[in-house]
Amino acid sequence: MSEQEQKINATEEPIEEIQKEEVEQVQSDDPLEEAIARVQELEEQLKTQVEETTKKEQDLLLRTRAEIDNIRRRTEQDVEKAHKFALEKFSKDILNTIDNLERALATPANKEDESIKALFDGVELTLKELISTVGRFGVEAVGLVGETFNPDLHQAISMQPVEGFESNQITAVLQKGYTLNGRVIRPAMVMVAA
Image 1 (cartoon, rainbow, N blue to C red):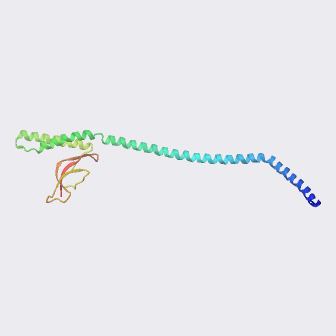
Image 2 (tube, rainbow, N blue to C red):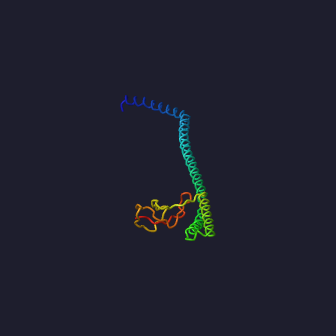
Image 3 (tube, helix red, strand yellow):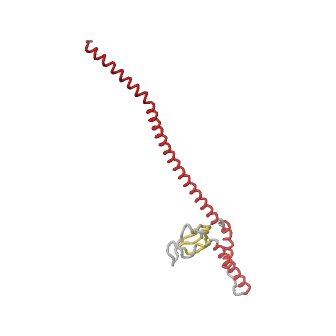
């Protein structure tokens, strides 16, 4: 090496040492700044986590409230249906009594005889009162002659071409059908025009 190179190297070495010392001083000053930066970074992470957790908890709260509202609504509907259709079994059983009273009135008898006429009048009044009573509780008769056949309300026994009736019209009712608050408890047995 020449002397110039040695001088340059000699001047460079102290520069490098000075720079190392400055870096060490900066680094010795940096722990506080690094700690502050680290704390700020952790605060930001914590803030992000808190926001995410808050959003999740709010979503969970909303979903839970919606589920509670759905359960409450379903329970109210179930209770309403229970009240509305509690008489279904009783209504089905009472329909036989109505049918028997109607059959009694349909029997051919000598209605000129006063004792028989009084009996028929009593049966007719009883039938009217019974129909009125079940009607107050939501029981209604379905299946009238001339109505259009509805498979939800009627049960077709046979189909025959009949003059004076259009296709799919009820021509005869063999047994009345009944609904309880709109729900069929017994379909009407009918004959339908073809």
